[in-house]
Image (cartoon, rainbow, N blue to C red; front, side):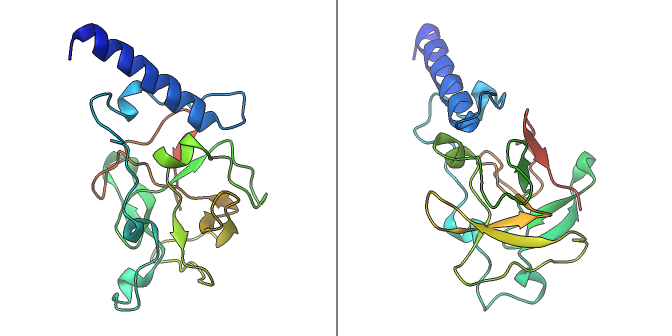
Length: 176
């Protein structure tokens, strides 16, 4: 791929990311073009369904938590998904206790929701001091986990437990 083609492709991806994460909001999220490399198809593929859902009944008691508090590098103690140890984030455009997510369309592909199966209640693990709850997503009907009234999300470019690549304008790591 020529440098010019790569530059144009990167600019297109950056515009898509900014537009998708802004949803119907006037403000963009500020996610850089590197959030979705131009050389990959859907390189920002969401964590697997197993990663975004609560663990199965066969999981151990410690893994049964939907959300846990863990020490993550220089970020200190943050919330992670109990099923896979991945960092979870909150979107500044979401409104506390509104019962809705403002991350829709292209945004949800980059910032997948932390969900639990229908009828399930999220379980707080060690160190989680706030209130867990759920909202029903308008776009797909899934139950998205909330912490202190705000929806929780993964960042698709976090690839391993302890990754914190999703800190951008309007996106924050969640501390207990």
